[in-house]
Length: 333
Image (tube, rainbow, N blue to C red; front, side, top):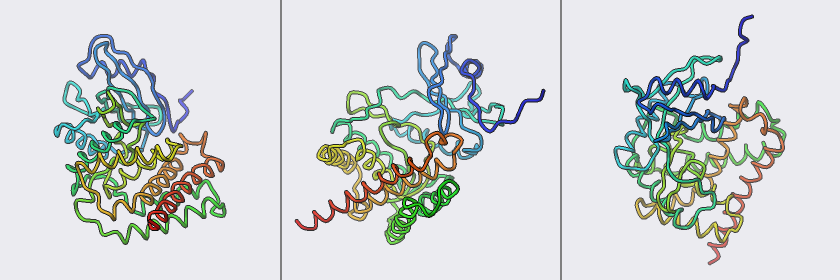
């Protein structure tokens, strides 16, 4: 009986261990465990001496050239002594492996393991350190471009909305809100007068789940899968927005977001225009990720429902309403 075609598979951790062992200069006893499935699949690799992370890209999610651009960026950051997880070459100097999975060829990259722990509730010191590292990355990538997506209004807002129309009626209140807020943010982005050093290469997914913390102030950033080109304030805004939903006590949020911004501005200045755009820039990325979940319905179908849309759009509304009120209060002072 012929093998039935598949659109997605989960690779055997045992077989992947043998695959990695055959190509890399690791110890004799290589252990591999599946850590997470999602947009891509992540495995933890160990040879009893060193830990690594293997990312198995899902079919057609990234082209080989897009992955190469990501890896060259990471090596560039590493060479500039910035704390990021970076790719490991095999014995022949290759960074990208190919595996003939049931659904087709999938790419595999081995990365260094980011030592430390994930810290959902960060201290002010840790927020300051994240801001400092982000600013250092932005400082050396400002004005540069890589051969990947440009995160503009069309990609972040309009394309994301279009992807969602395949799953949700445009008559839904939440979809109408997304259309309205998308047009509003798009207009604000068009009016922004970006200088060359306010644009560059962005990570687009810096939050507690993609960084490791050692001793409160030693930060390592990883998972640059969504890196591309765009306004650097996008990274700043996304981290602020994540802090907003982690900290239910908004007094704590204000203290921590100020620590983060202080850490950032100790290295790289933010203009008044950039700071003013933080609410809309943060909302645009959340809308973008709704579009990603629609694109990758094979992964997101468990939770991608109308109830989820209501919850997610509710978060965007809360974020925007909070900053409208905050801005009004500042004007009264």
